[in-house]
Length: 225
Ligand SMILES: Nc1ncnc2c1ncn2[C@@H]1O[C@H](COP(=O)(O)OP(=O)(O)O)[C@@H](O)[C@H]1O
Ligand SMILES: [Mg+2]
Image (tube, rainbow, N blue to C red; front, side, top):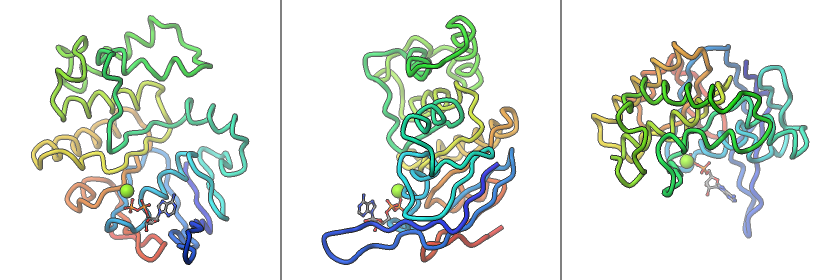
């Protein structure tokens, strides 16, 4: 499903270059759930941005679903992102003037969406239901709690039935009880949606709920369990 080889990312700064990822390798099977932990500044977001095709590596290769993403054109990458990937960011970036349901439907506006609006809308509604938001569908983001907004963002990430879901510190701003709920939700969704989940977090407890845990240290991944 996911194969990373000799991945290297160097940021050219005003001073010395910063080597963030250094000959990093990773292989993930379809349907697995993976957590990557590491302290702040260790390169977790950098890695996720590379996997999400939002940034390009200095060298090395990234294959997702048998496609080499680092050599794709900008346009192909955008299409690939929209079709095959789901993102849950630390800040949820819901559109404040749109309802929960409209936010979940937002990805279909990006183009080449093959499904009819009715079908997508039905799936969006049932996803929100699965996430215990059945009675919050028409709420605006300001009418939702932090945990509810996050769940809307999760539904939005899943609406294109992605092969790979990428989450960056998804529970960063939640209290521990809610963080635990979200972790449970991810493992449930991982089982029901058959998507591959990859989450980066500095929260070790959260990480331990995923199938495989890696630590990002000195630019490489070390398997923890
Ligand atoms: N666009 C950038 N330009 C230069 N340095 C960057 C850039 N983005 C991140 N960095 C540096 O790379 C390192 C890793 O950052 P990041 O991937 O955000 O870490 P994490 O998500 O683990 O906290 C940090 O030292 C950060 O300052
Ligand atoms: Mg980060």
